[in-house]
Length: 289
Image (cartoon, rainbow, N blue to C red):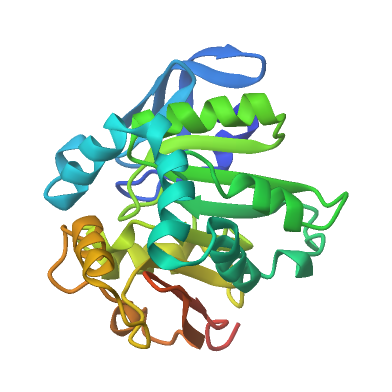
């Protein structure tokens, strides 16, 4: 199953105020099926429909966020095949090699059981069709109690991802609709945070980066990947045209290093493919902690 478990509700936070949520509705197999997640603080209610929690405000989805959602909703079944074919064709690097390049920055192999007894938690913001799930399962230490949480604004991509989860026998995966600008989690919940292929089209990339940093445990790697032409790459006219086509949403697609939260450390910017950068960083322990 890939929905939110009944026991997960206490680990969620209201996207509007950060308050505690309580579920009112139907459950099935220990998972939320239909109903509402209501906030005890501000009173906001968030729908759960057919096992999918919708923890975002529709009126906040605007501009490029809305446009990109329309595009992704229209091609969930084509996304992975197109990526697999076009990546080596246009960038002379295989999709698997590109993914390996950024996955190593997550340092999943270094994960260890948490001292508080809680499961280790990995968050992918913009999980899409779940193409990174096999790599996460491959990299985490065998036998480690790990939960993978994925959020996305595209219901079409999440449907495809839920199908992948069922067919692949993935356990401990939680999927929900949520906005990267207001993640429905408390501070420091996740031991690893990953985002691939969308932040350049976000309405406020700095806010999204701040949210990813907020929900990550201090000291844990955060990895962000998106389009940027490698300065050392000499593209052909076809490659240049293809890059502009896939980055139509931005006049200057580039690594948003300048937008990292204040205090970010261990910042590494690198190219994992001619069209894609990988930006990794960590947030330090608060002073006096």
